[in-house]
Length: 116
Image (cartoon, helix red, strand yellow):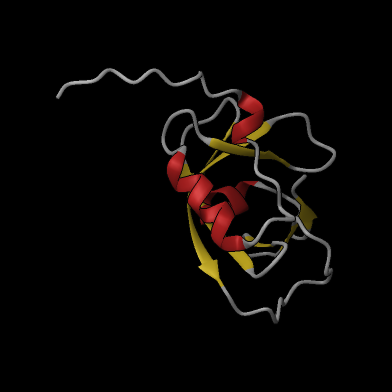
């Protein structure tokens, strides 16, 4: 029984991360779209996209950041989500190669910022 199934093309807006969702759902999206086309986000006030390839769910709701707003990023790349948090492990800023979170933070000057 070989049946060919046609699926609609995945649009970029479907791969954008919405940080108000639970961390479990965001992690699933990252895994589903990794490596291609890649789940992505932006740093607030920056124009370039950041693709996220690997993350770790943090179910503890005691977020250690300075803000309770969704999308807030701490100094170890842990992001506040709608429910829980997500630690970014591997990412790729637009125009650069894949890198781990430590390499990204070493080259990024700000320590506390927001993903949008």
